[in-house]
Length: 606
Image (tube, rainbow, N blue to C red; front, side, top):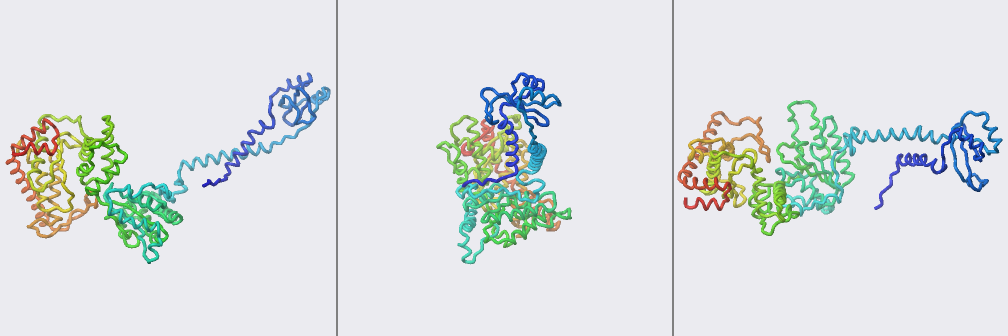
């Protein structure tokens, strides 16, 4: 397709300036400057044959060879002489029989170009440069109300559904949107109406944005992408103007997809502004609600939005007729993690012995972004060691690095601290192997990693679990307390190393009592705890209690009882298996890392 040529004032100005610059070169070749005294001498010597006299200068022609009566045919050097008031000039020219004539200077073109056009061009160039710097891409001070959405043309979105792994249910939900954008009549002929908006809900890194791009790539339609924070500015009315402009652009280019990432930055529930006054964000949200009501999905404009905090969104945004469909993009299961690893490993050269299913089993709870980072870390480790391919050892090291943090080789512990850490980690592992429902021990290490971890015990589930019984929760409490009780048993004192274990154990025990109704004393009652975002572990410190002080005391006593029972149980296990504890700790001190099978061989029969 031929590109259209856009004529502009700049082309005209450039052409005029080029003509002015070449005028003298083209029309007056071989021109030289000459002083007036030299000119007079050349006239007296008979070398000048013709002179043109103007108000400011003389043009003298010196001919060589044959002469032609036609001025255009004459040959020779041309001289420019600044005119001097000489009353004897005409007499001199007549005496030497020099052909002379008067010449009227035509300076309007030069005056017009250099007096008007050139200054105007310079001013316009400075003006355009300043405004371009103040806001590139039409987002300057004169375009605050324009949408800042990134526009991907029909062929620019290369992502397909095959590039998205581990979210099969979410993909199935979005296939209908793709089919509608490809063939709207398939649904409209039966009177059906496609949802106006689809809200993708899931933890960070699960692939919500990738899914939205895949929908646009499969449907072969333009894709408008913007963050929720991209609407709101400090100036009142800018956000609402950007919403209007975005929907206007989308309507002109329908069918298309509008994708609003992190919509919670824009769609937070109204009335929560504790400062009061006119809230620009609420005005922007109101405009979004009005726009979603004002257009018909039959036009082919589908709105996709993504958030990991759906509980804080305004109810008006979630009602039918706006975001009709909510699609959960959950954390991938074992098969999903393996599929994601295979997608990201396409560009990585893997050794033949690599088994991605084993790596998928080692990464429970990881999302797509974590797994992509894991594969990349493995490739970097292999390249650092000069390997020709990424092997299982590289992937195992990458898992440890992603899950436990960077290995701190410079953090040197003294011998007493090493003994405490070794017995602490072996305490966790030994209790995990002694109870019935705990996950199997995969690795025990006393190599410092991350910010504060001096060692770690890695357990891996044998299968994906979605429910936990009372027995399983109590076993998990026991494993968490194994390190602290091991320190008490061996050294008759405790250290600060169990701080995180105690925090997690207390959180589990409190959830058992307040949320899951697992207390015989309090009965089948739940007590609402501080509400937290669905996918983010951030407490809301402003939430009050919904129960009496006596109930709160009973809850505290039940939590304390659970922790105390678990402590007594772990003390009995470690006292009974003291020989296994000491032997495994000694081996860990010498090796620093024990794999799960090695650990089980050491404690076998003890």
